[in-house]
Image (cartoon, rainbow, N blue to C red):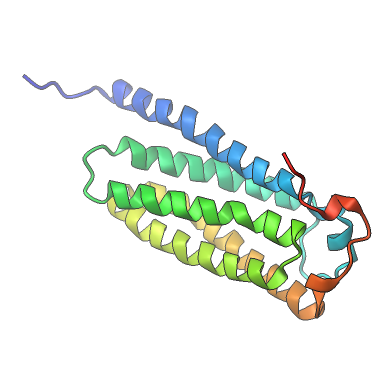
Length: 185
C-alpha cells in the first residue's frame, strides 16, 4: 500500500534539496568570480569608460548573491519534482546555463575579452529563457524565481555592450596591475 507523504514531509524533502543546491550554486559562482578579480579590485576594469547607468561596485555582489540563491532554490524545486516528464531536460539546461555563466568573469575580467563576454551574456540569456519555459512546465514558481536573473542579464548586456562600444580595443589595453590576470588555483 502506497502512502501519500504529509505536507511536512514534502517541505522537509524540498529543504534537504535546497540545503545542498543553494550553497553549491553560491560556491561555484563565488569561485568563478574569484578567478579574476572584478570591480575596483581590477585595474584594467577601472581604466575602462563605463556606460552612464553603471551600478555602483557594491551592487554586483549583492545582485549575484541573490541570483545564485534564487537559482539554487529553483533547482531544488526541479530536483524535488521526481517523476516530472521534463525534469531531465530542465536539469540539463540548468547545468549548461550555469557552466556558461561561470565562464563570464574569467573571460571578461581575467582575459579582457569584452566581445566574447558579450556573446556569453547572450548565450546565458537564451539558455535561461529556455530553462524558464521548461521549469514553468514542471514548477511554475521555479520559473518565477528566474525572472530577476533574466532582468539582471539584460543589465549585463547593456553594461557589457556599453563597455565594448565606449572602449574600442579594450581587449588590447595593457593591464596596469597583476590583479587583472586570472588567478591560478
